[in-house]
Length: 70
Image (cartoon, rainbow, N blue to C red):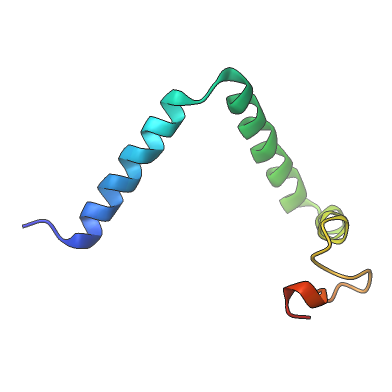
């Protein structure tokens, strides 16, 4: 018997595989670039804070902006 949770995982995995197969070379390059950026940001707290400030998620003092519950 298959549980609902495992059915959801299979469906999600199939959708992900299909999306990956259908991605254009430009989309794949963008995805790789975004993943690389995320890895670089994760290694450097100052760069992460600067990114979050540019995105408007945190204030210059490091607190959440009002739009995000601060």
